[in-house]
Length: 609
Image (spheres, rainbow, N blue to C red):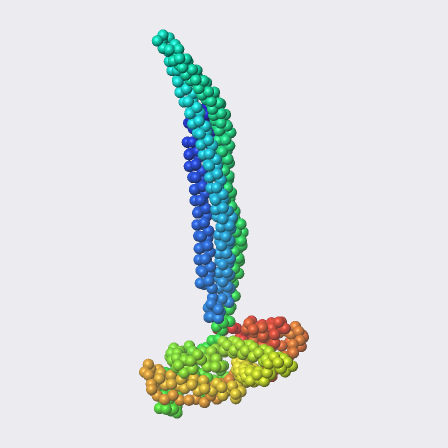
């Protein structure tokens, strides 16, 4: 408040006090500068928060783009790789990073609405209030200055009138003392002096009134109006300071609100990392690339001490020779032992040797591997992606591919049947309500669907035949399957013979020279006869039927609850176990229907890749 000595202070949080001079105008200037500085600070803080929100949005966008960049593409080979626990954990991490980015977007939105928007509106109101207070202060200052000017004018007029009255009185006294002056002149001077005295008295009265009014106005100005204005300015400034403090608290609270959700995202990433099972991933790799072949047997001793009767190991690809006689020639080249599936004369011991042993012996010989690669390149050129029956794959991989193909065909059949059912219902509606459409318009489409379903069913039968052959359900392929795969077998055999001829020299050794001889064709029946000599699968354990199972589908076998049977093939991940009741009865049952007791010492209990 203002002191009687016309010094005033600005109380409250804006201390130190503002010193005054004879007029408070200087203090208004100082306050005006200070309050403008406060508004500038507020606007600077708004700009800071706005840039923070832009950074949060940019960071969230970059996180989302990063997560999207490493997401697996749909219907691609990369998507198949995400079945392992490690890649599943990585996918979960990418998804959590999306949620993590979402929380940064929430931070940006809340800061924009709770801080930037609110403070922007408050700054506009603050500017209007500040303008109003300083306008009132200037108005009060102008009023007191006007009163002061009126007082000064009244004072000068009173002073002038007093001086005029003194001069008139001196002139009258001078005229009255002069004997030469007429009485009329003396009377005139006396009247003039009286008039001047009266004017001085009037000016004095006016000056006194004006002075009293000014003193009252000045008292109100310095003790009421100006303190009130300063108090309002102080309250305005204090509200600004409190508001910026509250905004800073909100700034921290917005971050604190998303910390639990961000922590949950990080917990989920940790949980995904802990779910990685290296044993499970290894087992999946084993199941994916398991070939079903057994390791090759021991390599036979080759006796080179008898030049004319050199025996050849079963695992070699060199030509068989006996008693110095050469094999019959086809197309100018001797027929070597090219492929383990091609029929040849076998000794009783060789006839009992499993087919897989001979195949592995063929695969583990370096010259044969080179030949096999040449064969593979030749087949790729002739058949493109590979044979239709996947006979170029190992047994286990071939079974999985065939099963996958059967499932795809069954899905296609179901789609076609759904379309046919829908068109049949539409036709019935047309028959009942001819105005809705012509029933005959759907007959052509129904006929096409029927043909498509029949073709797909034939395809399913074909692949199921190959699948049954691989799984050992059928002793040999049907004539229909034989005809459908005959083209591949002929080209396969021809490419093998050509490869062997290119690598084989007359003395039975291998060379690197290329040959342009004509390919020979081996009958497809030679490939099939190899499967007739395979031994039945060995028993790897026993099992007890927990429930009764009616095996109505092809390849399954019926069992009664409590019945004891032999296990000849473990569950390979498809939910089925192969069992045997006697020499003539064997098939598949659901793994969940039996309790298996495996023999750890059984040869068949081992799984090979």
